[in-house]
Image (cartoon, rainbow over all chains, first blue to last red; front, top):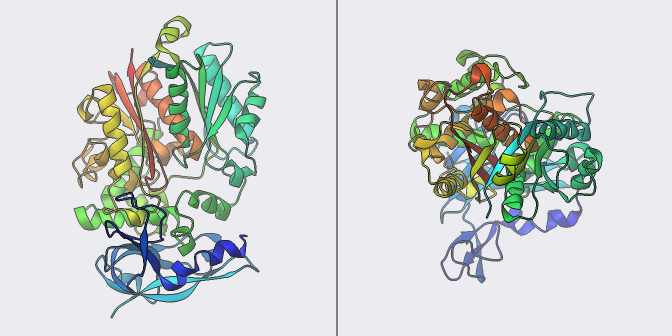
Amino acid sequence: MSTSARYWREIPQRYRLEAAKCTKCGKQHFPPRIVCDKCGNRSFEKIVLPDTGKLVTHTVIRIAPSDFSTEAPYAMGIAELEGGVRLTAQIADVDFDELKVGMPVKIEFRRIREEGEAGILCYGYKFVPVR
Amino acid sequence: MRDVAVIGVGMQKWGELWEKSLRDIFTESALLAIDDAGVDHIDAMYVGCMSSGLFVGQEHLGCVLSDYLGMGPIPSLRVETACASGGAAFRQACLDVASGAHEIVLAGGVEKMTDVDGGGATFALSTAADAEYEVYQGVTFPGLYAMMAVAHMHQHGTTRDQLSHVAVKNHKNGSKNPLAQYPFEVTVQQVAESILVADPLTILDCSPITDGGAAAIVCSLDAAKRLSKKQPVKVLASAHATDSIALHSRRDISWLSAVEKAGQSAYKDAGLGPRDINFVEVHDCFTIAEICVIEALGFFERGKGGRGAESGETAVGGRIPVNPSGGLKSKGHPVGATGVAQIIETVKQLRGDCGERQVKGAKIGMTQNMGGTGGSCVVHILGSV
């Protein structure tokens, strides 16, 4: 089990989708980085990612990690948001037959898992189909 | 830099080795390699192991394993780069010899995976992905490779049957390998109809949980001619490249650019191209991985890797035999040992010691070992002397 610091350190990203835009080349980084991997610049402007995008790929997890075993099966995917940033997340409220590359999704704030039996309740982002 | 040769290899049958500990498994493989080389000492050792800390609660492996090998107070180092740890350990051993630092060096790999339950093993393996931005969300390794498969199918029209053919071919090869964990054959239908792990991948698309070790002895080519009981095998190229840790950071989800880069670097160093390679041992942790890897190494055009096993081109006797050992699929995948076992198969093939799965007339072989979803890749080219 981890300390709470490991959890709250990532809250700006997991709760608010805070990202960093390179002031030199404009590349958007999520999570933020210390140095831009595209141009080597070290200064960034704080931005908030848009909450809509499209699925680039998807799967259904049938055999899950221990902390997620009661949730299985669940859908997961990688979505590309407007602006080009890509994220991995669960796809909630979806029929598995609906899953399709290119499917429009929006990002919602959801409970992700409970860490162990008495651990932190972990929250973050999930994708939900736009209908 | 000096030329480097492999003069000895050692490996025992892989599987669920309930009676044996991590240190037993490593030591037995290492002694087999030392005996095969016919040397009475080693000057240094490098051992690939992904996660002994999570699998058996033991770090500081360099010390543990040199202690139990009983070869004296030699420099001994554990090398970790996820599932490519074994290939990376072999590369470090080669660089050590090439630099002139040491003369006879052992490159080993080991993983003891069955001392934890399935959930524990899934967790340990997941640490090769981005812990905070992939694993946190609930993804597994089969899930990540499943997303590569969906992307490949969407972009290139790769089919469910083409995935199955990779497993069929590798199990057929593995059925002729007495050291394989699962030396049985499977059919296209069995692969497709076995239980789903992460859509579209079934349990028979996945490599297994395995206990196993592997070791090789390297020395300078000059010393090899003097020391070796058997025909030495020359290391023609050793290359290593990296990519993003998160799969989602890559523009093309099913293109393995670290594999492409390591492959190109190895070809350049050896002065060879894909057409010069007689066979290749690749990292088929999942069937889709083999398809993506044979494209990135230049054996098939981009998007056409699915045809490899289906057409028979990657079978033993085909245009470019892929995984004559049975690959990770059939031989097993004790993570840290896999890269060294690929070297062992290559040496045995070049010695002509592979019996029914022998690639006839093999003179040049390649190995490709990768970590995570391809975030690390190590490629070697070996040739007959």
